[in-house]
Amino acid sequence: MKPRRVFIFLFCLVFSTIFPKSGALEEYILKNIPNIENARHIYNDILRFSSRYEIDPELVASIIKVESSFNHTVISEKGAIGLMQIMPETAEELQIDPFNVSSNIEGGIRYFSKCLKLNNNDIALALASYNAGYGSVQKYESIPPFSETDRYISEVLKIYTENFDKKYIFNPVSFEESNFKFGEENENR
Image (spheres, rainbow, N blue to C red):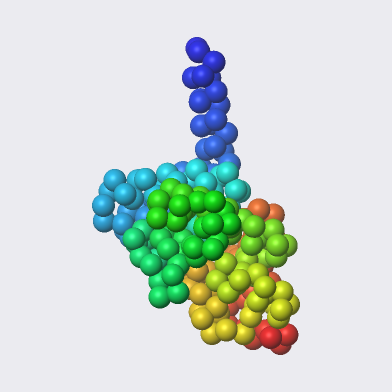
């Protein structure tokens, strides 16, 4: 066997053991994206970049569903672009083209990975940072008291737990439980 083929085989073997292909993820994406070619492209990008940045691909799909409902052409009133709703300033900082689907997914996952690291791998705080900005999370030393951010976190986590049979809210890197609990008031907010 040629060295390149051996490398590709080993890469695929390792990739599939880190994040095995998820039938639930594939079904979810196909259900949300009517164009099969686009669905396959987005599915493969989610798997590839999730593996690269060690993020659960099902969590990424949950974020995309809430951010853009899988519409790669959407631009929000605030100017956020594409599937992962990346702000132009963030795109510039990440050095990506937010209008390019693959670049948008890679940049969004990379940015969310940064949010996880800045928040000690707490999914709820990372989602708050992704939605409201890390500065807001720092300022309040918790999830900021913004109804939009509360709704965002709840929607992402609801999709993540209900559609992908996740029994616990856990950190996809360390598998620790998150501090965020559905329906609980945070006394520090």
